[in-house]
Length: 291
Image (cartoon, rainbow, N blue to C red; front, side, top):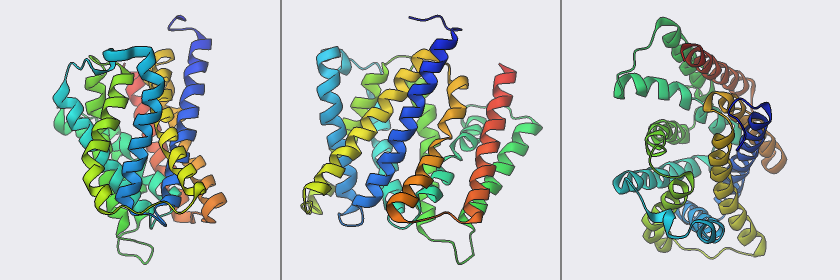
């Protein structure tokens, strides 16, 4: 293992988290393409089913039964349930919204985490953090523009997904102290797939051709690899080093939106995304200074 302050270790971590952002952007692009022709709940279920099958094939020979020795089973059940709900909300929103729009709203998560930490964990926020939170939320409002013609009700689903994701991140941090990243990601995906099975089968529609099946497999592979890359990245570099590089995902989402769906975000979405990202980075900088 490389030393914690080794620049090479940090570069490996940054490279892995970059791969993760590419995977997650590809996951959303695949999902948006699939939900145009298949029921959303079926797409969500197939995303987790392929995730479990593909990552289980890789991880089970390496770790065996150790993957299922869980220190906090109830927390795993809660995390898997939240993962299923979040993904369903995101995929429903992707039916109607641009990838860049959902990405901009998703990156309000660090701002929401700061709010939840103050409310849930009792952390005190100083004036600078409150300013960053308020400015970041103003950036979200620029993206969603409530009351304007640009507002689509599906934006509410994306906002709910961001709220769930903030709580999901806090829960994951707590679980990481006792369980391995491989167990956390595989067990949660299995629980999500189990929850979604009856809903998917009730709406089942056979994918039309080999291309659709290929995109389904790519969706699950991108999700599984993305989570694994994130887990591995944190073994090489700290969260403070990695966090700024996660924001590059919004660029890839905008690129996929343009290449696949011929959708270009307008000036409000671009400006709002920039405000959200800068506010999140400022909160991160304040956190690094405090530590």
